[in-house]
Length: 344
Length: 83
Image (cartoon, rainbow over the protein chains, first blue to last red):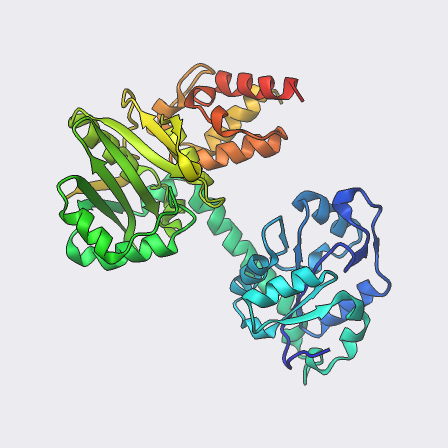
């Protein structure tokens, strides 16, 4: 086993690692020998524990509870996303270096996948789990009162974050208290760097996954047959900068949205459809039909749902998985009551 | 709890309404009562899929299936009948 010194957190797979059997296949799983003692001892040493498992969240958590070990795990990642993502989420939540994480899994594929994305992480095959307690990387020089309490401190922190998240997602009072300003304008040259960056980076809420270069965007900005919108958000904490762009192609009969991007950072602010609503209003004023391209990228379902819930309908399937949506513009939502909209 | 109540509770908890005091019936268009942002849209779809153990296909993502409590309940019932 090659593990760097100073491991702060051990992340466990579940099926055939922490327990024998595969839960989602209906196996009657049983904890591997000595697992409980190992978890307890690591926890006592102040080494944090977490889970990265491809499973149904509720089933797996219930099973961990049944075994009486659920309380050990911080930020458990139980879903079907790649484990490299899970490890990233755990690392970010606990806020430690990737090289202080140790990942234990029985499947070479998972170990390799994680390692391929996070070169610095330490990986160990589940076969070696019984050697962990004796490995120097998991024996801290001192065990202090703080080590023993470490997990509890993180748990408190986790609860605070959860409360904040629950609050930000739902409460309109909270949204109103932010004093949000949403500014929409047509792109200026100085906006293009950021616009280009958004096309490259923001893949979760990109309506087509298309990527445009600076020069292409500059061409659209100057073209009279296109409109390139950018939007900016600020609230009482300051400005989030440019958080969305939209490219529309203008013809005699219609406006055609070729690209719509919203930064994931601001989705919890409830402003994901404001730019779209603005374009719908503008197209209606110009007496044009409104079309939009959409392509499923596996990560932009929210964008599709937003289009459909804004009354866009699929009218055609184009090549390469693109669909074309049309909006008859008979019903356009009002803007949300919790933002001040400025159009420049 | 009936399916109507379940859906109503979800909407009350998650939709940002234009008027705080608003009361709405099972037939009222929720898209006119409040601001349906991306987050709400996605939450509603995810909620229905997980709570009623179903998958909403692209062609079912029609606003008319989701604009009133009645329509949502009818939609879910029509899905689960075939399972």
